[in-house]
Amino acid sequence: QANITSMLAPQADRVMSLGEWEERWQDGRTGFHQSNVHKMLENNIDKVLAGRTGVRFFFPLCGKAVDMKWLADMGHSVVGVEIAEKAIQQFFEENNMTYSVEAVPAIPGAKVYKSTEKNISLYQCDLYSFSSSIEGQFGAIWDRGSLVAINPKDREKYAALISSLMASDCRYLLDTLLYNPDLYKGPPFLVPDDQVIRLFGECCDIEQLQSVDALTDRQRSWGLDYFTENVHLISPKSN
Ligand SMILES: C[S@@+](CC[C@H](N)C(=O)[O-])C[C@H]1O[C@@H](n2cnc3c(N)ncnc32)[C@H](O)[C@@H]1O
Image 1 (cartoon, rainbow, N blue to C red):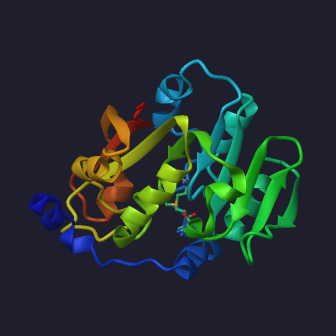
Image 2 (tube, rainbow, N blue to C red):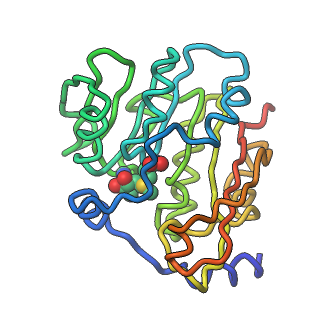
């Protein structure tokens, strides 16, 4: 425990406001977006589906991830949450999809954007105002750029919310990053494997599926000399 705490110390107080994220979208500073389906999702989709069809996927902090369309095209349904309206609009426009927009009475100020053709609903609101009372629980969660993007001090609150959204057969694919936090302050933030266990180990079984060297020029430009991407499969313990 002392080890993780000292490892995380350089980033512990770093805070990104919702307004700062929205500004990034306004200014086009969205280097985290990938134009192709994420390799870690593609490589591990069979383990997430485990033979199931028509799975309900949750995308916390969804941005305009093309993974959402990929899954919907395969017959799954997708619910995402994203604060930046620009990201949601770009998702539908760039994928040539028409949509409707409605208010969400249970979340003041929130809107839900629903694809007309596909089973995709994107909630424009703060993740922490979302709950299982809005869309029930999910059979799968794809967490890329989400746990690593939230402010480090909010991780327990985040884990409690995500756990509450997991159906008993949920398979939660979590992508985390390892690098030297003395060299770069984030986001994305460092999430050591011990912390994944501390956050989810009590309620869930955790299996590390993959660990890859993901260092590219982008991370080198941040001053990093190593950058490891880990993917975990998390599922509620059966009792
Ligand atoms: C690093 S990006 C990742 C987006 C997406 N998951 C991807 O892989 O491309 C994090 C996203 O979360 C959004 N965001 C950050 N904090 C949020 C919050 N508390 N509630 C809802 N969205 C949030 C940001 O606007 C941003 O689009």
